[in-house]
Image (cartoon, rainbow, N blue to C red; front, side, top):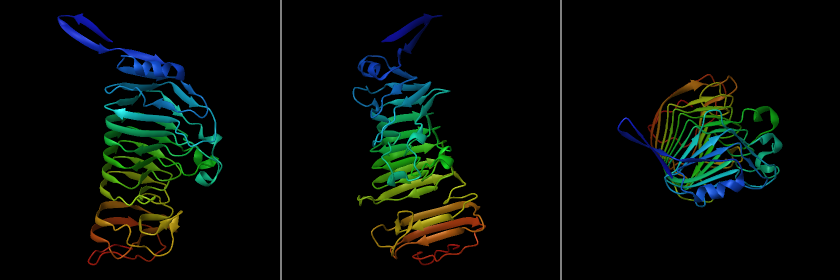
Length: 330
């Protein structure tokens, strides 16, 4: 339904909106003709997802308003599922998607009880803007199978987890996606700020702030041999992470071909060649007991360009596999 207002000789067309306050109303709203669905002060029962997939028409705008909460149950989740094409997912000022993660946190992360990921996203030609996610039990945004999607002004706020037992609370986990932009956002968590998994191409991570976790990670693997290509990480600030750029406790820049369960394991192999890598104008400081740069890769790395200025770390560790002719300040 549209509302048409004739004023001073001009025809104004305003898309009609419907407000949803409980799960039961949501399915009817998705099947209706309203172009804007406002989700306000909804409580989602334990073991269920706030389901924004079935029957959500292309061109729909979904707005989060008020406080969205969830019942407690040990399950895989997600708490919110968003799928579709040509959608606008918008967070209105003052809203919060409150995962209340302290109910699951047990200092064990994935090794402990089941914990639901917060928001699963599988979108095409869509915008996700202004969402505030607080205290996710596990992952914040699981971005899977997305094409031509922009995430902007996202706040993943898990800082309470630093003192309450949160682990494995990745901010953005991206897999099997093309042309995805994550920009002007902030993550405070206890794992990777950005984790790029297999089968990703043209992923842009611009002007973001990562605080408290493990920094920005290009991981790959997880049983999928498809490559990660054309990754652009620009104008980001990494603060108080164990891997990152400023006030870093462990390593400033780390490239590792034998990563497993938190650190290097065995010898790196040729299953994940790192090619066409540019490190440009990456600078920052590491605490005294940390390492500025650490590289452990197989001998198939090639075509690297390196310019970094990371200082402060006094613990030097062996660098292995750097392409010939490339000077890296290990």
